[in-house]
Length: 139
Image (cartoon, rainbow, N blue to C red; front, side, top):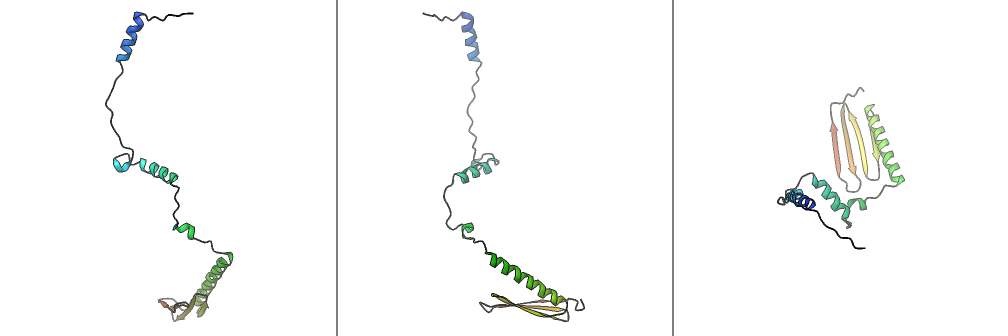
């Protein structure tokens, strides 16, 4: 079975005019990276792509050095905070007090409306004194 294809002259004319309607323009380079003049909105996208492909781990990363405090440490911190709050409440009532922890010695004295807080570091021996005046001693 032999088929012969032949183009009719009207088809050739139509193909000739259809091919002539194609328009060509010159290529214009537009950079993607905002560092080289591209759209600034591409910056986040490019950074996320780069970070997702980064397989290197930083050995000095701060998150890897963090250790969750134990339940006993959290309880001790909470208890120290509660005792310090109670000590300050007692000073507000006109009483003096002292709190001794593993790290610090806290002494609080109220002298006629002048509140003196003396904090001593037990490890180094450094002392800090905080003086607050203008308190009402009748409270």
